[in-house]
Length: 157
Image (cartoon, rainbow, N blue to C red):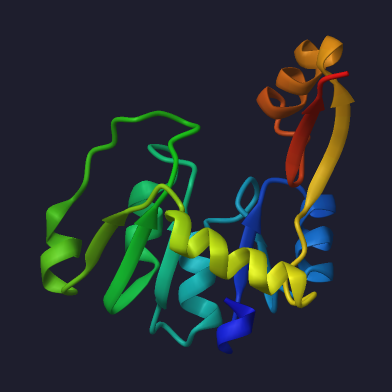
């Protein structure tokens, strides 16, 4: 988003994760565990809302993400870590002319673009930890306990 000149508002459940998001370039951060991020986004944008929300959480955040969008905004959903089913108040979708898009994060063409940006040192993978395959239970624990910031990588000898 920053490569395209966007203002980035990031949410996370802990202040340490928010600090990491700011280090990576987030302009504003919101702790969604202690703050209604929909209301905070509206305040940060002068009640306008945002143009795009990327939501990988799912049912726990979907309606708040929709409410945070500006008229004509787009919700991109690329995961459902909190659950696959979520009720939607359709009034928000049609009154604000919103688009809801699903994404698996791209295909081969997009991968080529990302690899080019990594090669040009414009994008950097965010790695939380690298563990040997024997510690797969610890890797899952880190993810389930929401301790990871970035990818947890398992190595095979």
